[in-house]
Amino acid sequence: MKKESEIYAPFIDRAEVRPSGEIFLRGEDAQQLVAASQSAGMAVLGIEAVRIDANQVMPYIDAIADYSPKSAMQWEAYQERCNRLALDFLREAVEQKGEDTYFCFEVMDRAEHAEFLKRITSAS
Image (cartoon, rainbow, N blue to C red; front, side):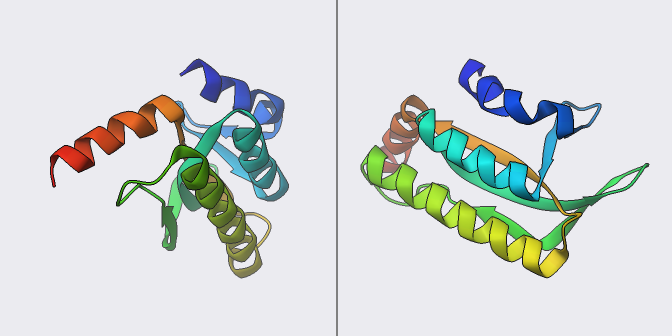
């Protein structure tokens, strides 16, 4: 997704990019990515906190956030809610896990949200 690549661009020099292509950001950069997502018209759909050493990525199983839509919600309200909750999650995770915590994100744009809503409303 082009827009997703654009929101990562300012942080990529300080990011941990794994061979799989996953991008991990630390503390302040992670929080700024949420702000960049909001400005770019995107919502943070999910976050995974991890510890990274030279050989591996170790997820914190108690520090995973999922803001997938569970019911129909207008895009603007959903985007604001997700990004606000994402910032709260990041602050708490850094406080609990420390400054060396990295974060991996899933983001969603308006079109993806509309598609998702079609699926959940047709399943009802």
